[in-house]
Length: 336
Image (cartoon, rainbow, N blue to C red):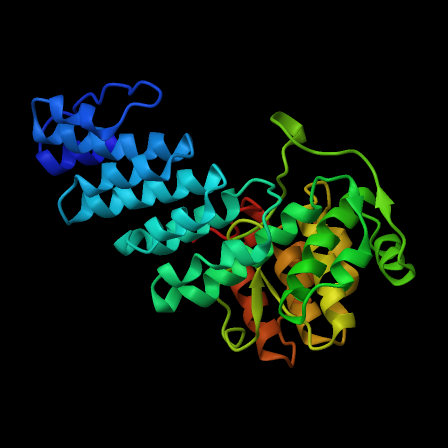
């Protein structure tokens, strides 16, 4: 991508940015004979330094660039790579200077952080480096990732840890616990809920590494439905977001339904019972999950709900029927 953008910028053939040796600093870029090559080298140097967990070298590489789009790109690449290396605070400092890439950079940092022993407060100390409009969203993403790392893939879903979370972290903690509990209960939502109520620790296989054992699941980018904007949400895995319940009990059910969706083997039928739930946020969540999954009954079920008295339900249904969202890819609902 970098090479293609450089080609467009210069109006010519994409230059070849030579691979940098491990530990190579931005000073090697000064040896490049053309400006485009030097720019490409500096951006790559910043990214390489980020991957190697070296904030000082990443900072030096970006500092060698003039203000403009390539400087923003440099901070974006450095930020996301430092995040993956576990250098959260310097990563956010780069995101705060990434210009139009700041939001994407923050999301990439948040969801790329590996399991670390650092306290959440350490991560949150980097948030003030971000633009004001990003601070709340970034802090929520960091809370979600911190709790995700405490639970998902660990092979242990102890409800006591989440139940003891500070008030401003409780929804994130419930959500992370629910992801692991649903995984360990093999999609048995009542069993997972019973474990929460009884304080039972669920255990099972640990996830990690590559291939099928990666700590991944199914999620969707939130699509906008009229009337839902005013309802509070928190980040879930990747770019997803979920509603926060009006009560702790409702919030737990919302987290468990989201956990079912995250489990890639869960089919659309699992969400049918929740389509008639009397609690609006649970119903909206179940409808969003149901409408994005393949189902031979989807068109009939959704058509029967088309005249629902709840305008948000009706808007969901109209949108789903218009775009036949159950025919799309679950991680990218709709055909828009």
